[in-house]
Image (cartoon, rainbow, N blue to C red):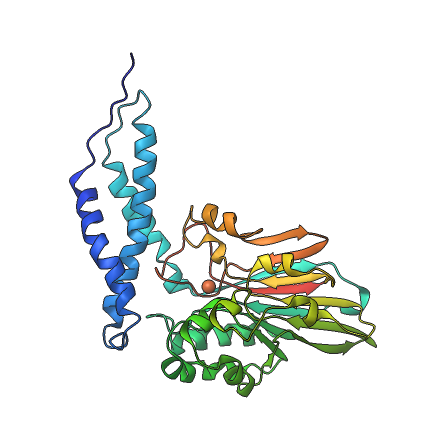
Length: 334
Ligand SMILES: [Fe+2]
């Protein structure tokens, strides 16, 4: 009878697992306490360790698969692969979010309209502070869009600490729209009022109508799909948001999660702009995101609706990305 043989895992992997087992949950717990500001860089180190651990785990899995084959490959490659990919995935902290352009087919009256979307900024994470947000706003100004949309997970820290960090958003002069993500509810606070004060149209199961070339564009928005898990008196209702008696030529729905498309039972829209997925953030995490969401990044036609999943302008947890990007998306109607 054939027997399977496994090579002994290297010592460094055992140490990584042991240290990570304490450090990762420890930094997560610290981020929820009043020590979070003073221990910002300890928490950041914990998040980086989390990313390195995830990448190491992925390569250890690959090595386990290789060990089932009749090949003699020394397992030290895992250490080098983890090191190289970890450093590579940290480069987003130097590059910042990149402008990504998409052309969109639409009705004649929208031709030339440029809509910019940012999502999942997670302002308040240890290295996503006001200076970083100012860089995002400067890039938005350079892109000079006609409309700006934020599709949730704008913040990721307690309200009193994070609210002042959002001041640069007031510098955006184009009409701007905002819907909440799940992290706004996890952290608590009246973010909708704060964004309203920063000059945003806050869309909470509601819409705005914009006239262009004598025709009408409807922009609707819903709070995050899971809002009623946090606040019992709130709901996410895209049918209500889109309902109108006006004659509109094109409808855009803003919803944090792509799966909101399945909440549409009566109304329809032409384009649904969402985020939440981070594109998986670190490969191959997108596989698990795909189990929850109908699209992980980019466009997908679902029930006749063009659903777009933004990869995120910031990130959550590890300040790292692999096979995904931090993006500021500009749609130009053609
Ligand atoms: Fe997010």
